[in-house]
Length: 250
Picture 1 (cartoon, helix red, strand yellow):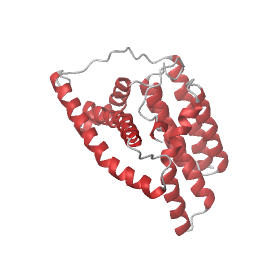
Picture 2 (cartoon, helix red, strand yellow):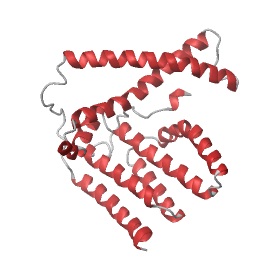
Picture 3 (cartoon, rainbow, N blue to C red):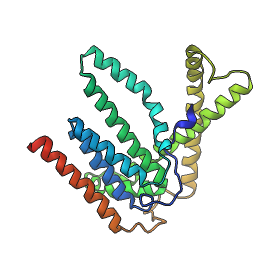
Picture 4 (cartoon, rainbow, N blue to C red):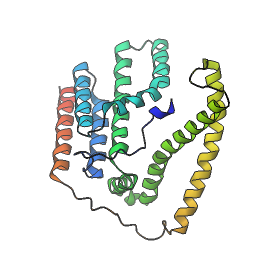
């Protein structure tokens, strides 16, 4: 079950998206999120789906890796469906909302699959630099966000080890009934949380010993803004303008 979660993992292959500047990737994601909020018709939602599929194909990563992440959204979709029935929300609106959540998840999965964690930190620091005007510690914020994403695959790996250990003692999660699965997940959650806290403490100590928090950090890679970055950002900006014209200006 947990092997399906790929969010937070890096997939090393050659592609145009892998070589993009992390700032341009974050800009494309931010623009896409704006487009999902503004799109209300099925034509525009279909356009967003096609744009997402095109972007994912450019990563040269098998599409199945992205669709595996949908499983973690199934409980959310069930809750949204029940809420829609209770409050008499049109079924088509609920369906489009679920599609938008899925597409946004695809984009964040694409970001982690095509960008090393150090580059995500760099992109967040540069993208959120305007927060320095408010006296906020942007490098610390970027590091905290990235470390939170980084711990997702760590927690998944720990969960897989626990399930494997339980299977060796005769507790088969995959062939158990629903109540047994819920009991196993309940007992697992406390163990995974304690192991994650221990790992975070070990990471904090390692960063202190390496003087990671002192002075201005430098970046290992030379992140130059290429023509392809401008090309992709322009495509998303044009798509946003088209949606704004159709939805707001009419």
